[in-house]
Amino acid sequence: MKDPKLTSGTTANPWEELRRLTPARIALGRAGTSLPTTAQLNFQYAHAQARDAVHLPFDHAGITEQLAERGRATLLLHSAAPDRDTYLQRPDLGRRLDAASVERLRQHAAAFPGGHDLAVVIADGLSALAVQRHSLPLLERMEEQALAEGWSLSPVVLVQQGRVAVADEVAELLDAKMVVILIGERPGLSSPDSLGLYFTYAPRVGLTDAYRNCISNVRLEGLSYGMAAHRLLFLMREACRRQLSGVSLKDEAEVPSLAGEPDLALAGNFLLASDKH
Image 1 (cartoon, rainbow, N blue to C red):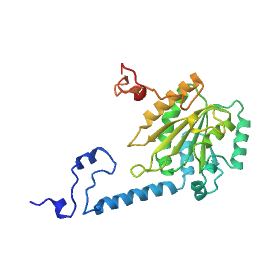
Image 2 (image 1 turned 135 degrees about the vertical axis):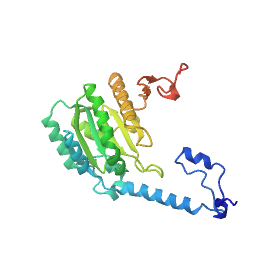
Image 3 (image 1 turned 90 degrees about the vertical axis):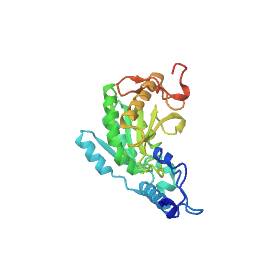
Image 4 (image 1 turned 45 degrees about the vertical axis):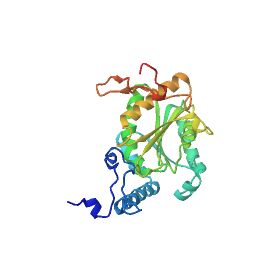
């Protein structure tokens, strides 16, 4: 009996079994010297999904409505980038707020003197799809743990056309001790909806990425909401204890096992693991 893959003109790749273990584009086979038609069409489809994720409008109204149902106040702001095209071409404008947003935050800060322990920011970034799918489930777990620690939270600040560094300006205007921004990451061909968290202690305008801690790939096929919140809370505790964040603050959080006990085999950063691990 003839192999249907050979009769269709496609030469099978001997590594094909490995495809079940990864979404990466490996072992696609070939048709002559080219990719098979199916593989080429799948690539074009994934590329279109990534492009759509970048240009999808930020549904801030839907997020605001869902947060209101939970009793959470929100503030809607806008970066200095007036539209999506400008945002993509001028990253610097996405890192700062426009004048109207600055004034709104100043009014809020004046009405609530004393500041907040943690400013919470949600921005569309490069994938509004990621924000719409994952920000609220993650936020629920994150805030539950933060409140259990006794930290005061700002209203949830929604920033349209925002980049990571815009959170520093938000937090500085709100007089917040710490800030975390939930933002859509640059889409990949297998992950158009990856959400990232960036945490900063003592935030202020002008800080570089060296002063931030990043937790990335938060999505159903990546890092779970519970694990992302667990790692963030570890960083927040350590930041308060050591009064710093960024490259000097390592993620050495113990990973809870299914039984509820820390899994020492997975504890901490494996690059820094001690001999006992």
